[in-house]
Image (cartoon, rainbow, N blue to C red):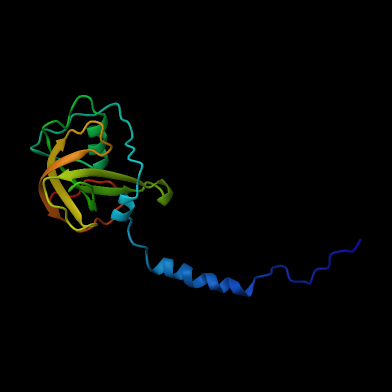
Length: 174
């Protein structure tokens, strides 16, 4: 049997490896655009995590909620904590159907692989331009059997995009 002959070089680096440097540098220097209305329009899941317990809402005229809390209460809360209450929600605008639009957020807990879309169908106020960040005030519109909770909006305020657009937080009161 022939013995393997080693050339004395321990590591072999192909000369083409340098071609990976420019794309890596570009990703480090220029962040890709935020996930926005295109992502919302192509998200077919519509799944809202089931919750069994809902604490009472604060006794205020307008209650600030995250989109996740609002959608969970609208879908699963059998005690009706949202009924007749005015809420304020923050997200970005995404096109809807039949003259409506959606207030949305793409929520990422760890990495892009765990991203989930949270959305509320908005009625009563004309849609802002897609991907515009807004705070919407309105009253929950019960919509049994519909996959997306709805809101009858009474006010809308354009806001700057949050520092971290992928955290579902309550924005400061406008």
